[in-house]
Image 1 (cartoon, rainbow, N blue to C red):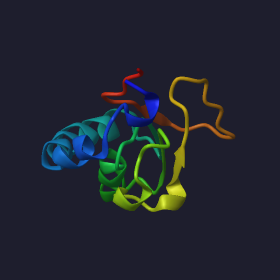
Image 2: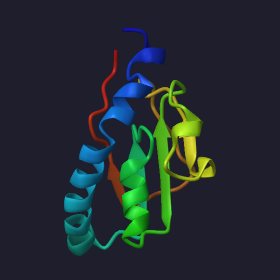
Image 3: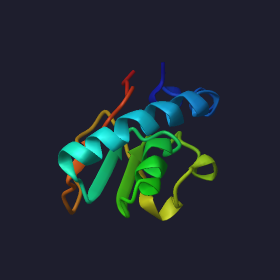
Length: 107
């Protein structure tokens, strides 16, 4: 499958309730164990996990996903998102306390 359609938008949108529920269960545990003040999500999709981190008080977060991702469908501010090629090394100009990467696949 070509990289530009590796994860069609309808896949992200169709699992919103399930994804929010999962994030709502896992994120409080991560916050209790690690107290991250910043989070990056590699393969963030529409940013649901990041939006849930924000709801739980994490103000510093950033999402990365393929260029096929629809900026209009993001649950986070588009300024906190960068499209990248997930099959190539990613270099960020900063570090984060916590990195998440869930259900990311390459072609």
